[in-house]
Image 1 (spheres, rainbow, N blue to C red):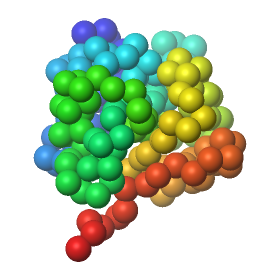
Image 2: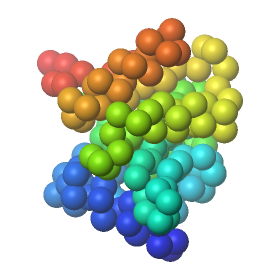
Image 3: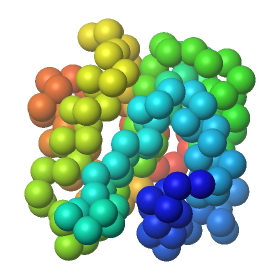
Image 4: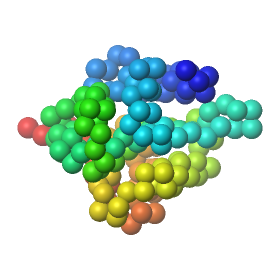
Length: 162
């Protein structure tokens, strides 16, 4: 696997701790391969002048049915990826992960990668976007993206529905 992905994996795992969470997509070579098989723009990243990764975004195209199951806690994020790989439908976009290393935050990298993702996937105006907010910084970025788009992004609730 490309050295850049190894570096991204190491940083991502230290923040999201996917190895100990059976609900999250694991940060592994296998998950990386699955993501890139879905679409070449599932993983987009930016590097600094020395070639070190400083920001990345993971987006997964899914069916509407998979989106609904994920948002209602019928499936985990890990299951979402496995289903997406099998169904290969482009009816909704799951904004899976957005990360910027702390020394490069507030530089607009998340917005730049979001714009690049939209150019690469070219969703129709009615294609739903959805996410699972993980951090306070993620929530701030999410609200900024909604304002830019002028469109609501569906969010998985913090707590499963009873």
